Image (cartoon, rainbow, N blue to C red; front, side):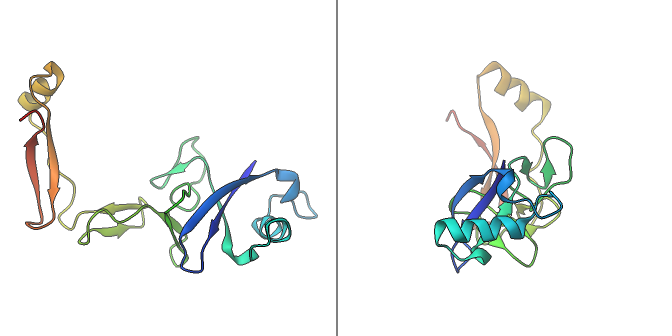
Length: 149
């Protein structure tokens, strides 16, 4: 099975559909995105250029089965297609965050959250606390939070 994202003119993913491989093979019997686009246009009355093939097994720039990642992330409703980078993006979590095209993920402008200390990890494990870092958009910082308080 192949998967195709139906996108709007504004590059928003509207839905994702499965297409039997027999319907997307070219004359050499190889999978072809163009064949899939033409098949979907014919059978859905939606323009072929607004059907973009996506990989069910690709997440955060990694193919879960060890193959070559395809288009950054498996497309889902509400995501955005970035034609320039050939990546499907989740919604931007904060206005200050930037695209990381290597991982197909959004990153804070100051990098990843700090690691918890061994003591904080042990308190989380013991369920006496639940420590984590939460992004503070106003302060542009990672704030340590105990979710049990």
